[in-house]
View 1 (cartoon, rainbow, N blue to C red):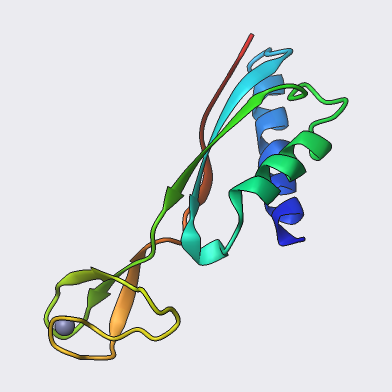
View 2 (view 1 turned 45 degrees about the vertical axis):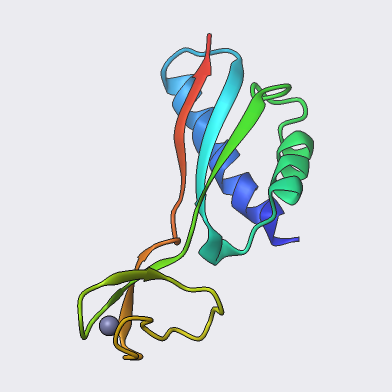
Amino acid sequence: MHEISLIHGLIEMVKESAADHGISHVDHVRLVIGEWHGALSQALNFAFKVLTRDTICEGAVLEIEKRSIRYCCQSCSKEFMVLQWPYVICPFCGAQIAELKQGKELYVDYYEGE
Ligand SMILES: [Zn+2]
């Protein structure tokens, strides 16, 4: 399950940051993740629950904000969403050259604790 490795890295980061700020317990973590990662919310929540056991993040609420995959057409510069990924075709001009603008995000937006 690749959600485990995604969450693992994020928890390590939160733990380190919390320790630096003298926070002994984290009770809320907000995660931003792009759909490009193909992660399922349910699996992310499960991984979070398992991996935070016996850590300062145990029992914290995980909030997940999903970002859809958006491309910017290199031909007409319009932005569009991809419905049949990985077939990237601009719906405005039909060009097949586009740059990924959104959807690859993976970071902790913020966390709270005391
Ligand atoms: Zn276009």
